[in-house]
Image (tube, rainbow, N blue to C red):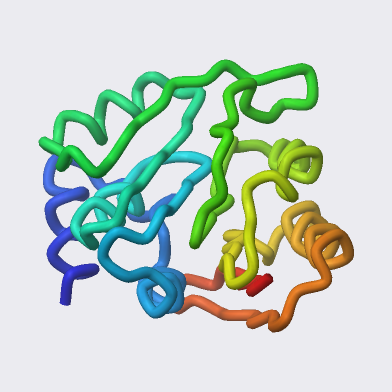
Amino acid sequence: MLYDIVFQAWNQDKDYSEGAIGKEVWDAIRLHIEPNSKTLEFGCGMSTLLFDCSFCRHTAIDNNRKWIDMVSARNLSSGTNLIHSDLNSLGFYEFVPEERFDLILIDGPAGEGNRNGVLNIIHSLVKKGTAIVVDDTNRPKDKELSEAIQKLLEPEHVIEGDTSHNRKFDMIIV
């Protein structure tokens, strides 16, 4: 129900649904967050609004000022922190928080292979029980990223999911 409400509000002025997080991805994420969970999102958009409504302590990092402005215009709670970060030479964000998270959503930066920079920092962001969601694993580079994370972290469990809009995602539980 929350997903449908946020989806409708997010797409009120213009249809952004093509790039929006799928309901099936959100349903999987929702099972792994509780109030006050610390969550991190690479990229921002409708998913940021969903995290904001979930009473977690959420950080979203994006290099695109347009998306940050669109999300921040939605009157976010004090528990959500949006960070603008330029991209480094690897095409990944220059800024990375120095803390560990309960859940990480990797859905940015946009561009085939640009998410691979997370491999250099993923160890510093996770703890036992962290759930990592790699969205868009229907794209070969994003599936390769998921597999590389799995090799690095030797997770307890991996869930491969499909969405109703012909995309895939992996949830890696450390």
